[in-house]
Image (cartoon, rainbow, N blue to C red; front, side, top):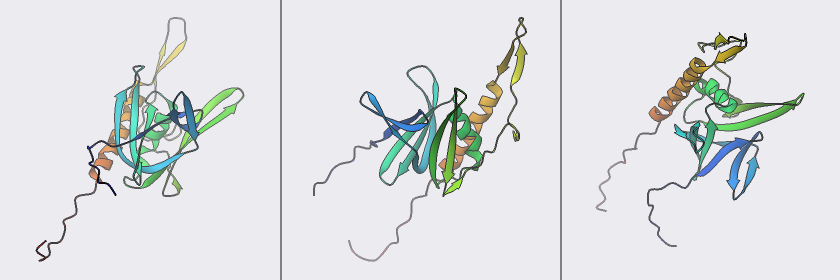
Length: 183
């Protein structure tokens, strides 16, 4: 056995969603998986190399650490954010991306399962539960344009609220009992 010093860095596997699957870059290719399961440790955002905002979902499963990255302007992010308030911090959660093609059109979705149960959406089209409708503007040509910025800001707030709940759920250090042994 050899002792090794932990330099404080955490080895992490970086993931995204491609073609309706959880994807990990493997050299020049992508390795695809049906789902990823673990416990969410933290949520953060970053700007990717294309200038797009991404949600970074840091999670672990045993000693394995992962970061699932979702573009904030994408359907997977909106699905996650719409379910965020129904996620229980500290519980195991499975991310199952879905891709269906109907009439030549690709439809994507995201299923979350926590402790074996499907996480329900808190914000839907039929039950917005406080989620703003888009602002509809009309061009001079009569074409309608939809401004989703209020909805997007609302969903980012829901993710931030989940992150605050995750942060407050972090286990407090356990006090070890003192004994009267000399060593």
